[in-house]
Amino acid sequence: MCGLSEELHVSATEHCPGERRWGRNLTDTTSGSYVSPRRSTRLSTLLPVLLLATYFTASFVLRLLRGGDLASDEAEQVALSHALQFGYGDQPPLYNWVFYCFATVFGVSVDTLAFMKNATLLMSCLFLGLAARKVVRERDTAWISMLGFLSLPAVFLLSQRDLTHSIGAFAAVALFLYVLTLVAERPSAGNYALLGAAAGLGFLAKYNFAIIPVATVVALLLEPSLRRLVLNWRLAATIAVGLAVVAPHVYWAVTHLDAATGDTVTKMRAASSHGMPLQLIAALELVESIVKCCALTIAVLAVVYRGHLRTIFAASSEWTRVIGRMLVVSMFLVFVIMLAVDATMMRPKWISIFFVAFPLYLACKVDAAGVHVPGAISKLTVLVGAMIFISLGVVFAGSFH
Image (cartoon, rainbow, N blue to C red; front, side):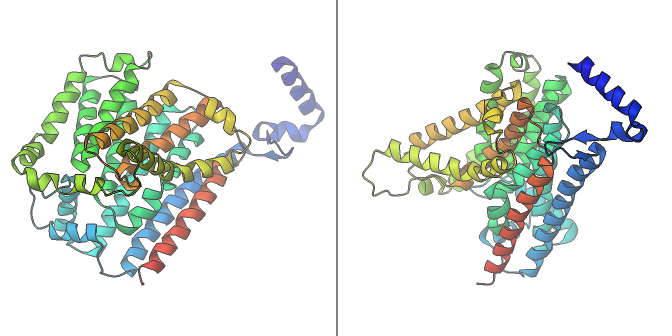
């Protein structure tokens, strides 16, 4: 069939001199029209870049226009920015440390708060995109991970209201995923050590990040082609570097146990009047939070790839299996912790850091399916852009009431 197709193409160009010149630059689409793949590629790259630049710039500017009224997390950053300490309270200190560095250079202000928040979110996008480029074949498909990240409610909605430590954790998770792909590509001692540093930074960003390395080890062990990454002496470098990064703060937390534990567990033990078993309540709360975290991202992807969803979700590759298992194991461990502390409440923002990997999972699924929809990335950019800018406007308007 390929030979026959080539013969027909040669015959056609011999009879149509005009097409001989341009035939190589034209691609047939599902509508029967012809487009330039080079022009299409430029557009699918330009639009997402423009969206990222415009959105984070607008987020920064609108936060300045909202004035100096600080939300609770922002006020905490300002209050704790006077000195570097190994710990500050019931949240790990990484975001406080980074803000201290920014505040030392630029001063303590709303400008600094807004710049750091948006710069950190942008870094999360970039690391996810870099991770996707390592594990997908098509360059355009990598944009799904970045655009999908913007479509997460914790990113486009909650972070614009009042999140700090979780935002630092988003960047840490994205960095961890990127370094994980580097280790898979080149399992050197240096990359293993870098993975340990990323894991340590993740723990210093948010305590529940500790679940992710455990889930990663389980997911890799279950994948025969990647099992070698765990059964490798270089993993000792990962453990050693990770422990070295977190050791000072862990020592502080142990010696300041009351301050470090705070009321997190108390919040999770919200009183319930349902009369149902606590285990069932915990399960329902977790499932509801999972749906809230990922449903919108799936819906956006479904609009763009309608008619191909069955193929996409049925497709499989080593990275779809690894990331999918990481998500499943993470949620299982969260549920175990909920049962251990008799938790009856779960908020989506508490598990939002685990779903930073979800857009990367979707990008790998589309790549594994080999689905090609003309203009898919442009459509995805427009949909995500409309959603996040509307939300940004709502948050801005709501800040005056």
